[in-house]
Image (tube, rainbow over all chains, first blue to last red; front, side, top):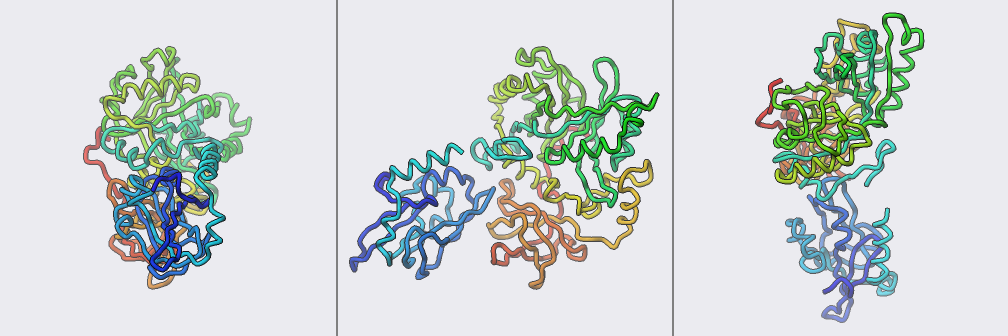
Length: 134
Length: 367
């Protein structure tokens, strides 16, 4: 997956949507390169249990750097069907491949309409450029 | 960049961990121009400072530096400072008191309140007070190689300068435009190192000259983020976190900086009483076995009951585990005591350990 084909939340999570075995939508979620560069020095990540219901805009996990703790927000409504335990144990690799091996969770989407509220790559880049100026 | 006490300061140039480890293994340079620097001159300066600061200063030798506190009438800590005693190029002695940026205005007002014109101008005991903070920049060059990096720039032998000593020097670089500065073997990182005050007009050029000299050694420009993790590993308190007007020196473990049997200073009578007890919460170091840092404001618990509060916490880049400082009841402050920290609803075990968390092997210079 390349970053220009992904959808993005304001809170810097990326989303890639694929069809599951029963035709349902499965969203793979990770953190953008911009977010990881801003966080730096990661030391701990807490990901949700499989089966947990999540809501768009609400935190499902936490990521800690040397200087601060940040929430990770769900970009969609749905249920957690997978969490990337490997990356949580090897945070030093997260920034090496944030859009591939650095995925965090997979969510079975319960409300497809929510996907329309996410940004495309161009809109997200614009947001990052604005944040970078501050 | 982040705002701090009216200054825009770099939190980090790259990675906090890389900057931290560079300072421990080779050297880091930190722009600390935000620090307040107050100068006291004149025949009455020594007695005036002795009657303002908790620590004896009247017996200091030229070139000596001491850590001291400024307390209010209740014995609460107004600031923690370094006092240096120097002689200028005309042979006149003077003191420089380095204060925290966040407290500079408060201390300037405190000085003025205790230095009315009739005292400042008393014949034979004059005190000339000036706030040099905006005129001078200040750099901390810290780490085992800092002496090798700085020596070519400085006209005196730095190896013969002892810890907590300093003096006026010439800066041997065209960028310094023949100006001098004050250098001291002091720091806030737990490493050997130096702090250099110099005119703000030459600061940028000298900063770049030091970076050039430091390149072969791996000198890293280091931000506020790593300065905080370095001082925390070294067990050093930070005003606004471990220190405040609600904390007295004995709670903070800074009784050594109070000389209660010499000059009278604001708070001395209160400190005489506070030293007798009963003792309030005391500052401790905590280590956590997990990976989640305990951070400022988190509650410290014992048997489910809150017994204190974390004042600073981070993930220690040197020790590779979370470390924190906080205040707990004196009966729970013994090394080895097992406590808990409430990390956003998760109770994580924390053990009281001796401070500092990190102590360098080679002291660099004898004390």
